[in-house]
Image (cartoon, rainbow, N blue to C red; front, top):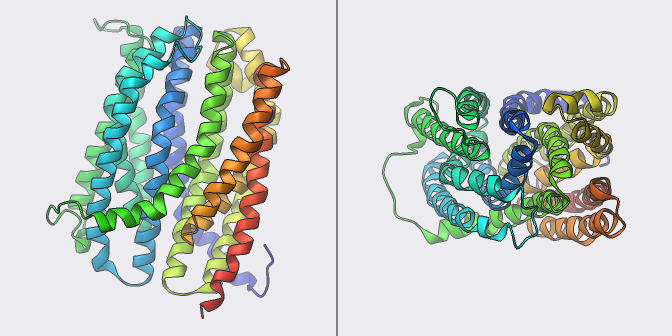
Length: 453
């Protein structure tokens, strides 16, 4: 991005504002990543087959979850736009319609995971992985409607520049998941030993507790009282829901394009056996935790860009974009260095299996390489969402991840026999293509700001 005439003091202030907004988001998202970390630590020490089962089950769980995650981001962008324009009376009705949308998406996810176990064997998943993956999916599916409602409430709060609940409830969930997951996986205190299935049930319980607590907070908080969020129940209004879908569904598909790349990679690697699947899960879990930082920054940038757009402040939009890039370059440099230097030590935390740890360490070196393109592409996508530019980025994501990344990864990993390392090379190239194309689209979209004063 060219600096043009943006003043340095304005940029420095915007960096501080974005940083303050993003910090609770980042901490909350990292805590969500630590949920997977806790699951994997427990599963890895239970058995390699359990870790591989959680890997496969988690991949199939995230496949449907990507769509509501992205779709409901439209609520944050719309709320921040209304807030910037002073249209606070429109926020409550919009939120209630978004709850209807979230409920429908949650039920669709439940139905998907009810059927997904029947596809495990036909997909060629290694036989020793199938029973545990099936049990994990049967357990966690009960929590996905709660997760969809939680995402709706989180986006409402973040759109109003209030990100603390994401952090508090994110970390609070860990205090439920860790003990309940351990008890149900290992069979402590008279409970049956459920392995991967126990971790799925523990995750579902955690999701419902988080959703109920978030709803209670929004209903009782003085901060949100003027919005009348739960003032009355309204029937679905399809025009408002359709408006959210027009903006949000392309975001959901874009998120699915990227997430699907990683998910399909996990499922293809699971065809190679328990050891490659477990090693991939370790590396992808650490990568996911690292990704939570730029994702939180991108969401904060979405809000800042949307708020500036609402008040017709073109210079403010550009400052918000530049601030996001400034911060994310620093965070990704730190992550890349940490993974490059300590990859083997990190892998050793997860498992005592030397074969799994060795392969996972080599994959973490590749993860260090894609930190920069991963951070830049999600930051560009976040800024574009703030501008409500979502359809073209969806197409660019399809080209990057499925036209470039997946064919290359599958060709190297399965066709030429490079295994998981070949698949990860494909991931890296796909993310790099996305970073270039999303950056180009954001630069191109700047001309939409010409009408602003």
